[in-house]
Image 1: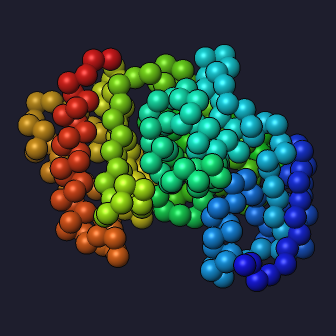
Image 2 (image 1 turned 90 degrees about the vertical axis):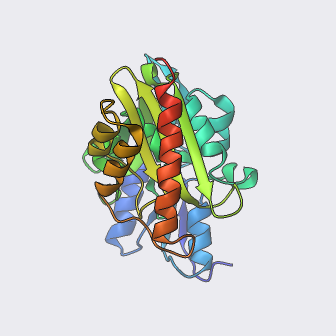
Length: 279
């Protein structure tokens, strides 16, 4: 049970949602955008979150788009993980989100909620980082298109009150060879100790990570090291781990040492599989 009262709004346009947020914020309501709601409900029940206003975006048509438009895959922020996996318009994304949660929760979790939420794993983000996707964001200054790397690579950097409306991905990335691997402590559907998504392009192999550190990320420095085919793969991987840009986690799921061990082996398997494939 949620132990506090809040105002509940159901806007039908992006502009209305942003306006409601600004009004509620000016009245110190600490408003939140709501799509699937799994994270908000879970944290509120545990008294880890409080808000005086919830803005439900599920009535906004732009947030429900899922189709190819003018050589781009357009995904609305309110599309569920189940819908993404079943549509399979971006196979790497579909397979990545398929084991991000159990089927019941995938029916509720939305791509916007996963990308912008407080949970550190944000596994749905990885394919978008690899595809150089663009975010369509709405705020007080209107609509803007921003590379996903500028806003969500690592810690989210959305402006206050800004709403993620859609994610745009170039069609040329959708059917490239890929690998996505999730390593957990016990059950397959659990938080990842190591999650790696990899994509092979003509320019080289791209990799993004979740679960290893406190933020999901893609690193061009790591990719440069891993793509140096003049060096044996084992040495490339050791160099990549030495250059890791954020601390490797040491938590209740796994020690730092074990996580590093799993990372090393999983990265070897991922790179080996992708290096054998043709673009």
